[in-house]
Amino acid sequence: REGRFTHDGLAALLAETVEERLLPLLRRSPLCDQGSELVLCEALVRYYEDGRRRVHPAHFDADALVTAVFEVSPPDGFEGGFYVQPGAHVSSRLPVRLEAGEVIAHSFDLQHGVEVSSGTRCSLILWFADSAAACKDKSRPWYERAAANGSVDALYNLAKSRRVDDPRGSLRGMREAAEAGHFMAQNDLVRGQSSSSSSSS
Image (tube, rainbow, N blue to C red; front, top):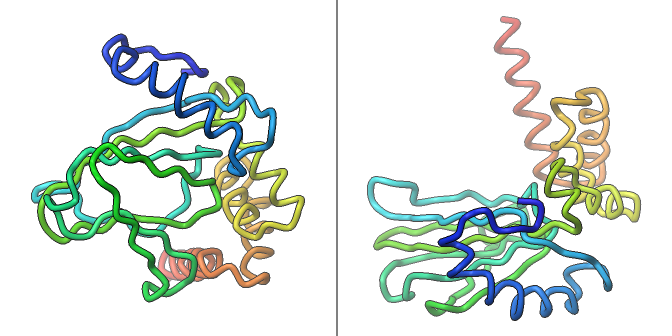
């Protein structure tokens, strides 16, 4: 919380790796602005197995400037896994094979997902923000900066984040992203119109 561990057990397991190895590497990488504070906001464990979820559809991480994924399960224990999807169609998916103990990090504007067809996969997800303040108030200043610089992905995600607090601004941003060719914005607008039509009929 706000860049500090709140669970003693997790701190014992992760603090040294995150603070002394991972964060210095990420702060020097192109994934964040040079000199960025970059703090850990949230950590979660994800399981994919029978009786639980098998799929996490292609998406953007809404609350993270940078996401790090630690692979816990050996790759021979499941079929499928993490992938990136740069395009609208599933044919653009690129699988990323990770050995147990390896980590991959990506920026907020990378569309990605998980699909496990058999076996059991476990991963540890770490979400980083650019300041303790952004962790605390759930603001996403990186979206605003990137949208102002012409990123359509950022414009879409910024519009999604404003649905509750600023629905008109959210709709305006969603339309701008859709007009710029963002397929997820186009899909969301169509689903929204379909829902409105169903509600009014």
